[in-house]
Structure formats: structure tokens, C-alpha cells
Image (tube, each protein chain N blue to C red):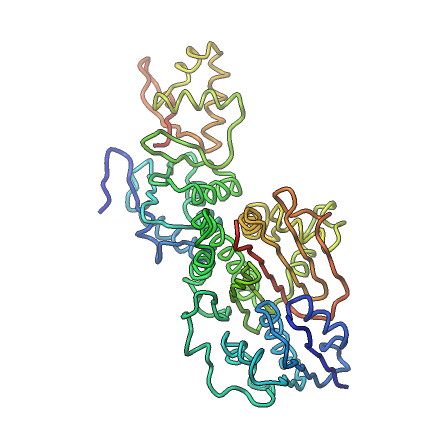
Length: 186
Length: 305
């Protein structure tokens, strides 16, 4: 049983693989379906941390067809990030897979995070860095912080959310009604 | 009519095999009903030539031609081919002279050499899940004195897994070929290199890719230029989100200055790394070669730093 803490779940990818080395479209799709079962079992979870502990090597096709494809499928609804990925060669192939699919994915470690896959534009990068520092932000908070209009702040947050960099959740606003809060994927 | 192919060079590799085919004329030609391949006593057949010859002979049998493989000596080339399991996978309809080995030495000693991965079949059946790992680790073992052995092994894993997956996905799962494909590795310590070969009898990557291209820039490319682009930018007939396999493979191979030899049905493209990538202007292309179905790749990895 995977530990469920608040609204995130950790999945050990190695548990879904037949060998420590993962390769090819076929195995990637097999793992995709196993991962989908986990996601459906934890339907309340918003973030899935995929641990690469025990995964020795993968090619590019395997992650593209499994985890990256899953992140793409659930973009905007659920977030997927990676942990226990310290091998540069492995990270390079996951980066290539994320780039090919056009799906960003964060890797978390004790040192912080790194982003694999497509980078946001320079203008969006600053907003993304801010959200990564403070966990979440509302449109009004960003507008205040960046001394921008609410409309401009909203557009940037929406672009990051649509691009798969952050999650957008609804919450009750202090003034009544609904507001969006934008969260980092961790 | 008969076609007689003479393998007389001291070292028979993919290039010298092609030269012998050019000299003899295309064994696939409709006018040819009988093909004899003669291997001289002093000839040493390298693993790339062995895999291509195996595919070609099986193709000729599939075309109902009478095929004879004749060795001047039972030692040398014949012994080596037996060691790499060549005769196990050679169509039983090929007549081997003076006689087909009764025992496969390769089957008996399989996996026992640190410098060899014997021929492995690729077909529509179960995938050889451990094969890329096995090839990469054998190559890593051969390069154990390199300071970057781990990086080389990991890169080699990417090269082999992407290439082999490409053959499974594009050739055998899409019914392009009835005949098996083959993979093998041989370390040549004296030559300071390891050859890894992947050979299939499909339609060839260009024949399947060209009809699906819509980009006018790509359509104008020669065969050699298009092969370079397949490995450089990853072109796929399945759209932009696919096609990373051969590119990923090349990106990893390039890091180790790997030379890539691509034999297609009627041409051969020889890619040498330049400025950290494969480029069209340094690719050597030999066209109008005798027909050999499929895509036959050979990677030459340098064993030294």
C-alpha cells in the first residue's frame, strides 16, 4: 500500500516494471496501464510522485509512453512529478521524452527541483519560480506581487496551468464566491 | 541463371560484402534462380557481414531460389559463424558445403564469451526483454579500462534499446516482414572497437517513411540526407510526438564518436560524427547496390577513451 498524505500519492515505478531497465514502446504502454490503475484507485489524489528508486536505466521511448504520457493525459487535473532521480544519464533520457511529448515534469530532490521537458517562456519563468518558492498563489496575490493587472496575472497563470507546469484548483474566496489557486506540482 | 558471390577478402565486413555483391550482380534479380556464396579459406567474416549475409540468404530462399553456401575450409569463417549461431538461424533449405555443422557451438557456449553476444532473433514473438541490457553490459565490460565505463554502458543501453524497439515496433508488429531479424555484438580488441549489428528484412526505413512525408523540405532530400535527418531530428511517420527512438539512439551513440553504417535495400549510408552530430555533408552514400531487403545497422564503438 502506498502512503497517502493529504492529496498526494507516491508510486514506485520499479514496482510496475518487470526489470530494473525499462525500454521500448511496448513496455512503456504496459506500465502506463498499470499506472493508470493506481491513479484510478487513488481518485482523490491530486499529485502523483513517481519514485524512480530501483530504476537503473531507461531509454527515451519507455518514459514517453508511460509516465510522461500519463502526465499529458491528466494535464490540468492531476499533477505528476518525479523523485529519486539522481542519475544524469537517466535524467537526460527523461528530459528527451518530456521534450518530445511537449509535457514538462518536475524532479524533486533534497536540493530542490529541476524541470525536465519544455521550458516556459522567459516571462512565465519568473512567475513559475515564484510559485515553486511559495507552493501556491492566487491571481490577486500575483498581481500584487508583480505589480501587474489582474488580467495580466490571470493570463500568465492560466498559460502555466495549460502548459502543464502548475495545477489550478478552485477555492472559496474570502470575499465570497470562487477563486482559483495555482499550485506547484510536488 | 546462376549468381556466384565470392568472399575472398581477409576481413569480410559490410562494405566488402557489398563489393562482392556488386561484382556478382544482384542475387535477388528475377533472372537468377540459383545463388552460390563461396567463402575463401583465409576469409574472416565480421559480425556485420555475418548478420547481413544471414538475412540475405534467408531472403533468397524465401524467393524460392536455390542457395548454396560453400566454405573452402571448415575452420576459420565457418567455425566463427557456428560460434555466433549463424547456422541455427540459416534456413534449412540453404545447402552448406562441405557440410552443415551438426552441433551449434554457439548454442553450447552461449553467453560464455566476454567479447561476444551471439546472434539473437527478433520477430513477432516475445520480446527479448534483457537483450539491450545484455548488449550494453557486454560492451561496458569490454571498455572496463575507460574512465567513463558507466556512462558508456548507459548510453549504449539507450542506443540498443531504441534501435531494437524500432525494429519490433515498425517491422514485426506491422507485418512488414515474415523473416526474422537479428542482433549481435562482437568486440574486436586488436581493432580497438566493438561492432553491434541490428539487421531486419522489412521494407527499409526510407521506403516506409517517404510516402508519409508532407514537409516539402524533407521530400527534396536525397536518401543519404534523409537518413541523416532520421537520426538527427527524429522523423516519424506517426507524427511529431513519436520518432524519438532513432534520434535518441544517435544522440547517445554520438557522445562516444560511434560510426554508424546503415544498409538499406539498395543503398548504404555511412555516418561519421562531426562536431558532435551526424551531418549530411560528412555522410558517405553508396547507391544502386544489389537489393537486400530491410534495414541493416552497424554501430562501431571505439573501445578507448
